[in-house]
Amino acid sequence: MTGHGSKFGRKQEEAIAALLTQRNIEEAAGAVGIAAKTLLRWMKEPEFDAAYRKARRSAFSQSVARLQQGTSAAAATLLKTMIDPNTPASVRVRAAEAIFNHAAKAIEIEDIEARVAELERGAEASQKTR
Image 1 (tube, one colour):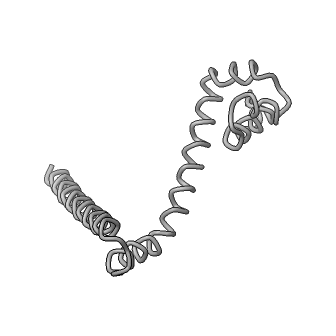
Image 2 (cartoon, helix red, strand yellow):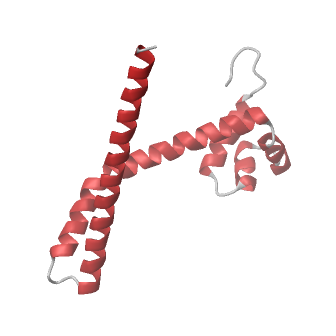
């Protein structure tokens, strides 16, 4: 967002980074060296708000990607827990329920993806016949 003609400054970029890493607005403002009132005012500005939301989405996306890297270990843990006879029965049942729930959700997603793909093929065919 910076560059020639941009009203977005270095302090505002630092404030966005601080908002992503500090516990609250006061701490974020302090980390940047501005008053909390100033930061609150910036947060009401459309350009700042848009940049902040974009940064939050990016940070969230990175966090989700990191969690996805652990899905194999999570699946292995659930499966081991479910079949370990030394694990309490209630815990094994919860692991089994989690496995069923995730498997069902995966099937639902696959079904939706297939339906969307079919709709897209139909739309493409419809456009070609026009």
